[in-house]
Amino acid sequence: MLIDTTTQTLEMKLAGAVSTTELPCTLAYIDGEASNFFPTLQHSISNGTTEVTILSAPEPRGKRMVKFMYIRNVDTATATVTIQLADGATNREIVSIAL
View 1 (cartoon, rainbow, N blue to C red):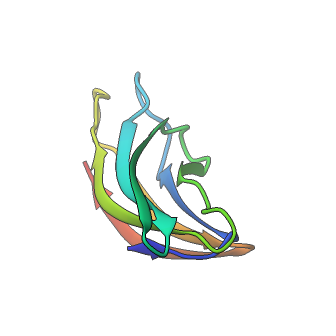
View 2: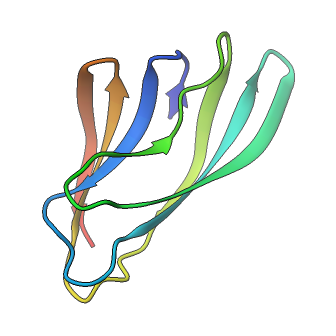
C-alpha cells in the first residue's frame, strides 16, 4: 500500500471495547522521495472504537510504502479490527477482521 499525499493516513479501530487490554500494532514502511528511501517503524496501540493513526501522512512530495503490519490480540476476548485509509474527511475501509 502506498500513502502519497499529506492528507492520507492509515488508521485502525475496534468494533467494540476491549475486555482487558488494548491491541498493539507495529507497522514497517519505507519513507522517502525519488532515490532517497528510509526503512522506518511506527508503533501504536488501539483505543477501543476510537480511530488510531497507525501510519502518519508523509512529508510534502514524500511517499510511504507499507511493507509489513502486525496487530496482535493480547486481550482475553476476540477483537474485530478495521484498517482504513483516511483521506481528509473521507475514510475507506481496507479490511475488517476478527482476531
